[in-house]
Length: 276
Image (cartoon, rainbow, N blue to C red; front, side, top):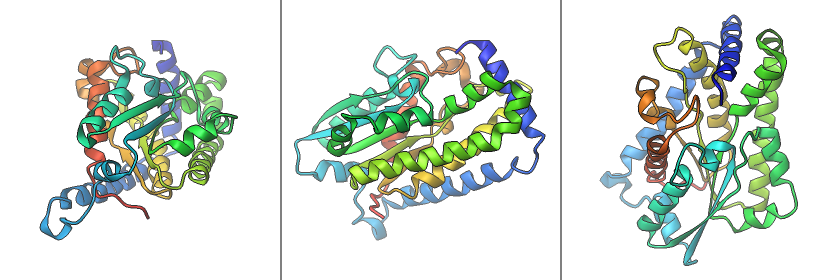
């Protein structure tokens, strides 16, 4: 993504901050959700939780000899910025080692896809069989909803339309998860949260952080309604202060960045498996 695109999105974010009321709540709520997940993960190794089966162990005990991994979403899912297939391929390779099974990866990522595009894609002929056969489905979507709004309308009009776009994103995400669940009630759904690619030293960094938190809160709350499911807290490892180490262009991770996301995904899947 070119720098001027980020500048447009930044102007949009700065305008959005004028709304005021949503500034602190998303971060507070996300921190609570992450803390709850972290507590569950840490407890998995204690004696009182020794009987818990992790998501990885669940995949290992499935009767089939192969694990089908379906990847859906945008250019991050596609692997943009990586010469090694992106975090999806890296995580699949790690899962193969940890489960002692072959992982069959089906990467259906499309560069530039929005939540509306993804909903249309999974509703198309041919996707039903892919979804039904999947044991794990990883999704990265939502960033382009924001970017395309800012590019199309400009920051002032984007601010006026923000609530409508936010509501549309939430509705689309619910429809995406609902449709997947109708086709496949048992697959583990993995959502990769949006990360902030703006340098923390920039004056507009707090604005973009709050904007992305608003989006991520929707993702956390929506994902939790369609268990078994987890959210990869990628923003915990793709830190803006270390941006130069993991960035490929103005937004996509490089090989190091994708590797960090893959490690977070495996770490997240070590939490106790929850069907409901």
